[in-house]
Length: 322
Ligand code: TXA
Ligand code: MG
Image (cartoon, rainbow, N blue to C red; front, side, top):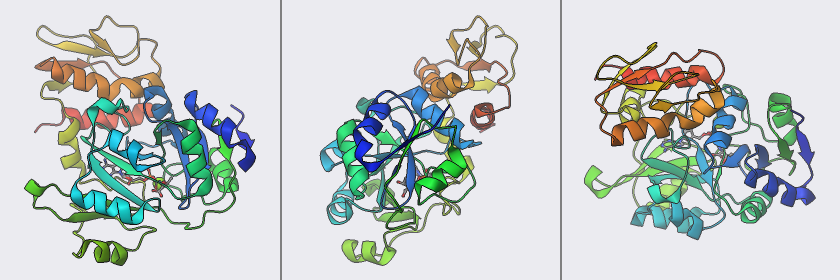
């Protein structure tokens, strides 16, 4: 794949590519993001493939304004206050997700929450407005490398792996967004700092008139490891109620097969054996098996290469005894 280099004046072309399900890196005030249509399972799966992420970390959804945020997430009074004070800007809020919004479950890695942000970069705003779709975007770097603050950094890491990069010059903030999670009233209220970033914690505390709470578990400050929570806790979110048997050649009596490749199966991650398609279907199929109340699930072997590593990581957690 040849990566198109687009100038700021070609933002309309970048918006069109995003609407077509392509991967477009774009500048925000914090760092360059690798954007894709957040409603498109395949496009979102391709983000993980391009970055070579060994796990499906949840992604931030970028939106142009409050109305579009309210369409995908529920805002508590604390969240509304923070949004009013700091958006557009380098702040991400992790909020309860509205299922009806039609976002790909892969965007939030099967979690019931969704991370949202209204960036302040002029080019980012114009791109989001023209695209008219929610844009999922992690930082536009290969997994484990530093975040890019220039188009040239993006190309150095991802040239040939993404469809286009929109060049908006250097990022003004140069540090990823500050990630906050307001807790519900039944969790005791307050706001958690999940990742320090481009918005100072002091400014947030001044706005809330209360100190920020620490994250539930260590990790997450590099933006690549989940800011979420310990892997064990994360596991319980996407583990279906049914018991899971991995690397199964076929379903045994009483099992439903979650297939991969050319096998006879009630649910198939990808009958063509395509790992991008399999990643796109993974959380949706696990949720469907859960809704159907399937007590025992057998899963075909999925090769441990490319996105197959992340798929196996998630399946192993889902299968872990609990
Ligand atoms: O400034 C930024 O935030 C940049 C620009 C492109 O917006 N984006 C960015 O994305 O840094 P990324 O994927 O590199 O980091 C996103 C962080 C990850 O640590 C992820 O675990 C966390 O956000 N995150 C996303 N959704 C979450 C959720 N539902 N709950 C908890 N953490 C979440
Ligand atoms: Mg990152």
